[in-house]
Length: 266
Image (cartoon, rainbow, N blue to C red; front, top):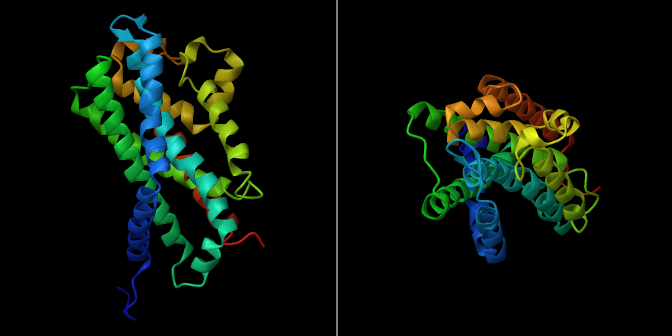
């Protein structure tokens, strides 16, 4: 609490986060689609592609890493870049502007929603992968540490970029048409659905600009054997580079969000 007895920015953000989660849970269609869609994709691709792409590495094992990374982009970037313009159209944000809640608390609330959603997605993907597709879980504690910072940093950067991109759609009605193609293209370019090194070199170079490629590569370092690093473009996992690039995108997303965020369409 502040000296005047009012909740501070973090407390307001935490309260907003709980409200965001309650509102999300009430939308059953969105809950089912958001949480189960990655699992359904894994079931489809895992059933169709059963080949071994490297010694001890099945396509399902490779695909799980990409789906976890893609889930952060779907839950953070895509969801927020679509939902926020809709909230703006409905007047929800304009009403919030008239309350004592600062914009930072609104950002924190959205971040909490994305993180909780991502945790459930990851849990379902890992459970489904182990039960139905022979997913091998990491046994090295260092890999779980890498997994933890990838989820936290990836979720944070995707959230910041989703809020930043939310000013691009002119209306909530057209937001999906603007945002979804961007995400789909990035998924194809970044090695979510295909083995990254089998993509054309120009696609690899374009993908390397954006965070999804590095999230996928980081997750592969967690779930694939160490020997698979030789199949990467740089013949190594480059986790240090991944950390720096994701941090840079997080900072860029925050700066753009703070400078361009709009409570209303006017």
